[in-house]
Image (tube, rainbow, N blue to C red; front, side):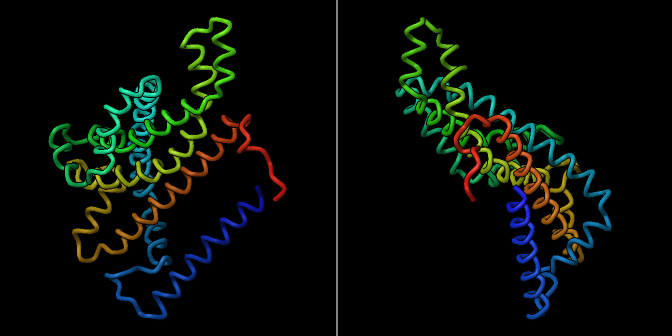
Length: 255
């Protein structure tokens, strides 16, 4: 674990150092690219504003992810039990996944109004397909011998779902969560930028992008989102270690 932390710190430090060196060595114009030191200095200077905005963005992403997960577990359980239902619903989920949601964010904001609802709705909508696909594949990968054993003792479908199929889907759901974590933050950021209320890091980015002198704030918002994503992935990894401590993927290796 210590080696992993050290490797992570070294990797990020080298990346930021290379970025800083590139901007300074090639004299990149300020409106094109900001040096990390400049953006982080602005982020620290206005840390109170960014902290308040970050709490809003975290809520939008977290509630949206929670809604997507609940819907996906129910829908995925139904689809895993019926191939016909899966064939009927899968094209719809694919359309939701591939259609550029940025194009209709404004319509969703007009429909649901200002505030939290459009951000949470869009996060949930965008993250649902990946969770559904993971749920279906995971539940269908359940050990047939274990299912037959439970059937031999007249276990109910609910018991089979709870004791076998849901644990089998858990690793796939955590894998999907790694993708959805960053996706949820990105969706929340863009919806906040298109929202009628000035809440969240996305609203800071929107105001900065509309001002000729807002490059520092814009890049600071980018770094703020990166920090949120990094913290979210760490929290997800810790949760995975606790929930999947029984799974082979969490066993220590020689390296």
